[in-house]
Image (cartoon, rainbow, N blue to C red; front, side, top):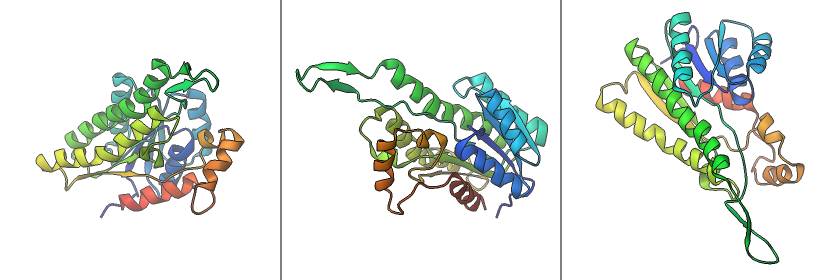
Length: 240
């Protein structure tokens, strides 16, 4: 059994949304937090909102050196890493191809840039964060949990071929990582899971066009968006 008290959480995308609520939950339960986010002003604002032992790193998760610096900060500042929560992510929705209703000819298509940036942040960024933190967890004999965020988007949603592809990858990564840890005798020290909470009321989701958001909420069985704090508490339960 693991206790949050004095445990160190490394959270990307930690200046807003689920990441910020997880940081707040961790600190409220006497844990320690290292927050990584690309937005420096948002990081500064987050620190003002939080209370406890917290360190921040301006981190672009698509850059190896940034992810390495994030993991190093946790070890240098607090001596260990016990929770890895690579929650940085974006959406950039659009149809892969959009034929004109009158001519039937394609008039617009998703650009490579629109596809690639989501893959870079949501998938490559997760890989780099997990790899760098896992290396330091192993080298420093840390016990803990790697927790990824999948979503209902993993089931495939029209207009989200980029986002859905990354979330589908998140759903299978724990199986691969756990299998590798078992082979190296590490599975008793480091677990890996993915949570798929569905539509969460993060700023990213709430900023969707009202008509689309209403349609989204209409598909949720409980009739509302999941609160970020609820996801944070669930991750805490998984850790324990």
